[in-house]
Image (cartoon, rainbow, N blue to C red; front, side):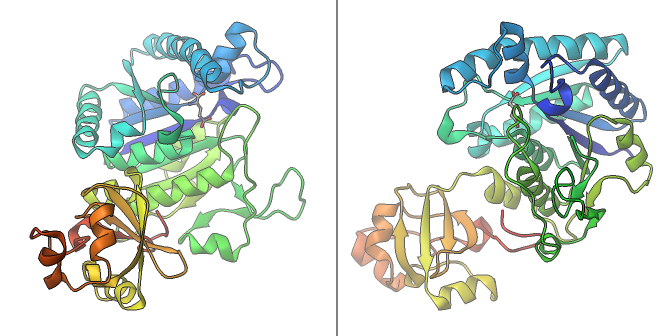
Length: 376
Ligand code: GLU
């Protein structure tokens, strides 16, 4: 059956660590594999980093830029070079490609999110391989994906992919860093995210000098993707042929089983794409009503309101300890909520002077954070 496959490759796989030059044989092998997948009838999206690294190498800059403006400038140089290389290689295999540069704000607003979905679907219908990166040149710090692992999971969730491949510089996930710890155990299959905690996985906090990811961001990406029902694989970037083998059923890399009851499209948007603008702290009764009884959030159950937000913004719902239990779209501004928190719904018109919504966050606009594989 044709599948939608999203593949993410990072700077450390695309360039040589010593010289910073492009790892041409890896890139060529990846292009061959992705073209082959297309010929087999699969829809393919590539999420590729490399803009900053390649931009630096083009300009003879030997250290990762520290200032935002420098990073944005070199990304503009590198992104063009990167696409040129991909286009040359894909064109020699008669495979058309497209460049899609996204910023986080493109996925926050519902209409833009739907628009991005339609564009991807149209490109795939045309038989094109979209090559996605964060629009590093224009993205502002507060509203960034930050790393392409997260970006790739959000893209996979947006298009409703079947597979997400996170290519990296190790062959799979280990219980500790295998470069330093000889006792590190390979992890082949993750059924549930909680398993990683039980195995005591030390993911380390950062990747190579040039990439921004590491195992932490890969696991976070797997969490997003598996709750969206996407089978996620961490495997080695140097051997892109592994993608074909894994799709054919071989047990390579680390595979994360998709959730059996994944979020639907709207829940995915609420849980993963929105950026919460505030926090609502709830009393015990409200936490229970939401987590166990599938109820909406009412003003009476809110003990504290944090942040400034407008009606229809996304907020985190937290228990008394500050632990996030859900996310949702709020029906009142933070200003109004300060006035009505703790009050019965019948009193709201009297307090605010208008008849607002009965619920503060309606069940249909609320997603539990520990549903499926874990916290969004
Ligand atoms: N978007 C960045 C780039 O193209 C990379 C982000 C990452 O390494 O995850 O250079």
